[in-house]
Length: 155
Image (tube, rainbow, N blue to C red; front, side):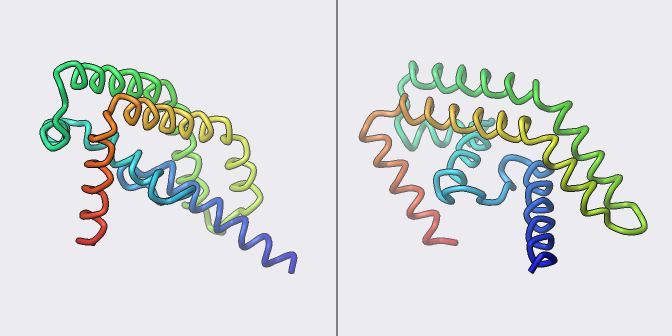
């Protein structure tokens, strides 16, 4: 039983490491699935042509476009503050992965010591999603939900 718990902890830790090391769009669903995935896609899609396409499909006003850009800029600034800590974590994980044998305890300790960074990142994503949803009208929120449903059906 004790080894099963250790294996579960290691698996969870590895998943968390992969979560942190991937890009926002490639992150796995960790919490409530759809909303988490939607947040990551929404943030990712706020770049370049995807933002223009979403703004057009949802019928953003000029004020909403400005608000969305400000939200995106604020989120990016906050994420950039976390970038050194996330990069250091990824480098430490790479060191552990390149060793002759996997040191479970070292990985678990590394994972635990970075929980504040992971929590800060999750908070930024949640705040960004909330701000984006708040700036949408009820009609736009319904349209977004419809687009999400259509996208899921294609997958």
